[in-house]
Amino acid sequence: MANHKATKKDTRQAAKRRDRNRYHGKTTRNAIRDLKTLDVTAEYDAKLPTVVSMIDKLAKRGIIHKNKAANLKSQLAKKKA
Image (spheres, rainbow, N blue to C red):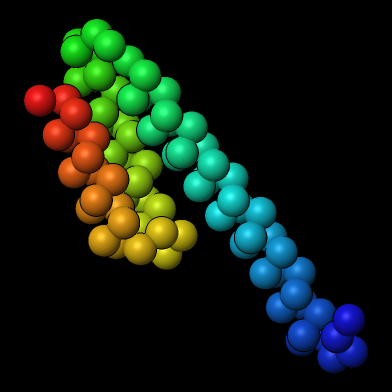
């Protein structure tokens, strides 16, 4: 464990960020999984923009790489067609 005040604070902040990032990442993965299981095109079309927005936010926050976000969105859009 760190001995300096600033390092202790940094450790607390990193833990908080890690938990937040894990939450957003897992929530998005679950949304993608649920979207892929939909068979009705109308429901798929209605939920796709929400999931794409979640993926974009992950990339913006740096939780996933921007190319991974692009690949995920591409695969979801291709499945729609």
